[in-house]
Figure 1 (cartoon, rainbow, N blue to C red):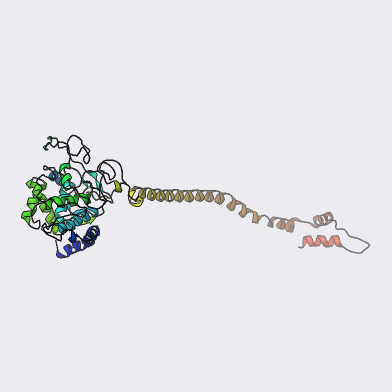
Figure 2: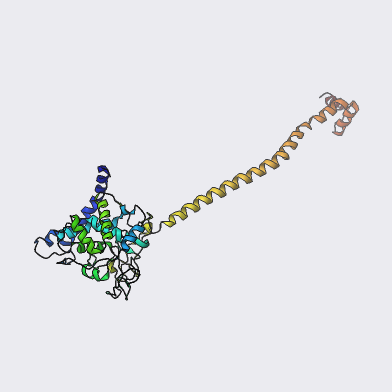
Length: 393
């Protein structure tokens, strides 16, 4: 990758890093005060004291995570939901403030999140606005079958909804027994929920930084990741992805984006499994503000198609055909052509007839019929004058 590309990606995440530092300072008045004494208690903002020795019990078990990662869409390793990216960077700021010798890079936490659950998106899950995997990520029962360890229930089904055997839960796939040791409140909402990317990312940081390993070195990274999952293939894959992230090969995508790149509707809080306010959920985050514009992208298609088709087809065809047909047929063949053409030739006929055939006697007869007569007493010739007028118009 070119230096310009790396600079572009690095610049894009600066606001998240600043946000992480601001969030950390707001919880404690400054992380430095929590661990100003290198030999004193190493305490997180929620009051959790960091383990004094390395945690050897695995956080997740088996090679299932490697298999899941291989099955994901190629290239999706570079897409990190914004809520997850913020959680990873915040976890780095908090843990390195409380444990000065750990030097944990957020890219290592992110690589584990990618391998374990594709940053909370495995199995059709998405992270909601509070960073909680919805509907919830649950591994298969650890009952000794399907190449799994046999781990009897340790949480009475509180986190994994299984009262017979444990199951790995949440974006970072913690076994309930390990979550009981490292579970923290990463976003200060008063609960510790393994389905919450904020809580589980910081819990992963607590796990990796337990012990004396310096996680800025490959040796320290390999040792801590191997404790997280006792699989060399797992360690190799995590470190490979971590290095890609450190090289800038990643981009932030909207939180509610699946691995395929499709943005799905935001889910509201529910009492079902994995939701905040449900079993092991964050009670205070179950009912979040309704995001109607983001929640229903599908209705955008319905209004668009219906108005476009109806006005275009119906009005265009009806006015064009009906008016054109009737006026063209009736007026042209019947009324204008025959009647107006014949009428003007009628008036000249009487004139021609009178001029050619009218005799003096007929003229006298017509004048007499009109009541014109000669009056001898007056000495007038009105009848003769009328006849002459008819014969000589």
